[in-house]
Image 1 (tube, rainbow, N blue to C red):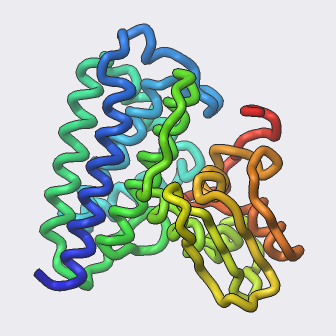
Image 2 (cartoon, helix red, strand yellow; image 1 turned 180 degrees about the vertical axis):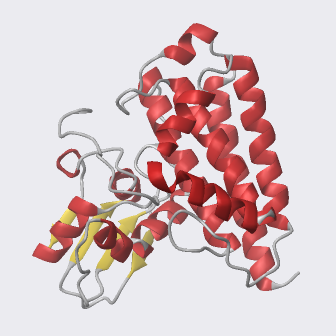
Length: 267
C-alpha cells in the first residue's frame, strides 16, 4: 500500500471510531430525547445527527461524482448562508430510529467511497478542494464537534483521545482560511502552537522562536477552533496581538463565519 493510501486508511479508522463514540451516546435514547435542545441555537439532538448524515452523504458524492456535487453547490449558491441549516431541518423530521440507521449507512458509504479515491486526487467541497486525507480529517472534526453538542445536551462528559490531534492540526492549517471568511488578511508570520495531548505528550506546530504563541491543553484548543467553547472559558495561554486576533476568528470548518459560544455558557 502506498504511503498516502496508508495514511488515509489510518484516518478512516479514526473517523470510524469517532462516529462509534457518538453513536453510543444516541443509540439508546428514547425518541423524545432526540428533541432535546443543544448549545447550537435552534438545533436539537436530531438536527446534529441529521447534519452529519447530510454532510457525510454529500462528501461521498464529492468523492464519487464531482460533477453532480458541483451542480448541488450551484443550486445552493443563492441560499449560501442558509442551505446547510435547511438540510438539517428537513432531515431532522425523520423518525429517530430511521435517522440513526441512515446516518450509519451514509458514514459507511463515505468510508468506502474515500477508500476508492486515487492518491493525489483533489475533491471539491464548499471551501477549498481537499485531498482524501483532508476530507476524512474534516469529517472527523465535524463528527467530534457535533458530538460535543450532543454530549453537552445530555450532560455527559467525554474522555479526550489521541484523535484530537487531527482536529488540532486542521485548526492550525485553517488559520488563513478563518481570516479569509472574515474578509481580513492573515499575518505573514507563522504562529507557534504548543498543545498538551491527552496522554501528556506535546504536539507542536510552527517555528519554536515565533513571537505569536498559543499553548495549553489540546482539548481546549480543539473546542476553540470548532467554536464549541469561548476563549474566556478555556485554559489557553495566548501571546501576541495577532494570536489573540486569530483565536477570535478561528474556525476549522468550511463555510461562513460561525457564531461560536458565549463566555460563561459552560462555566
